[in-house]
Length: 240
Image (cartoon, rainbow, N blue to C red; front, side, top):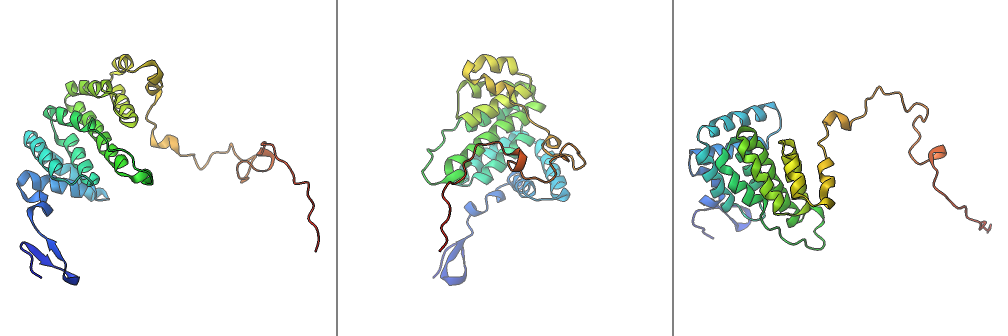
């Protein structure tokens, strides 16, 4: 079995080596972005440091970064959410104010309908993560180019899916736009204004804390702490 631009693998199958399977070979910028995707998903300090070096290089020609990310984004398969998520993350770190319109368009993309039985990892959920990343990319760009923050108000005014709306509102508030967000949100959604981002250290109990000694290691809702009503069975077991 012969295949043009393909390499045979076990079982007589063919693995295509065409350009569509090597999306980061098109130019110096695509190669750098490919390195960014790689190091973004690499654990450890070395990967983190290498990623920062890639971002520094990309920022030197941020206009080309936007054009390249858009091209890669369009080439990516619809189901390849992790790649598109990574591209938006890099654009947030390396792009300039010109990236704003693309990020808004991406955040407001129409989501696929949820399918029964897909659970929490269905197509709609993964696409929602991509849209949410677009919102956070706007935040990162806005920290370098403050005028971009106003684009978050456009997202809020379009009333996207609730998770995306909440993220856009949170990010806009963090960037100092709380009053404008309040004007855009209907009263029934003003509870979103009270959401805050908790610090990591707030989510962990101190190992030396002493306010639980009186309860010892009693599991919750047992013993004296169990206050829910209960009924004993009135039927005695018969001996055989």
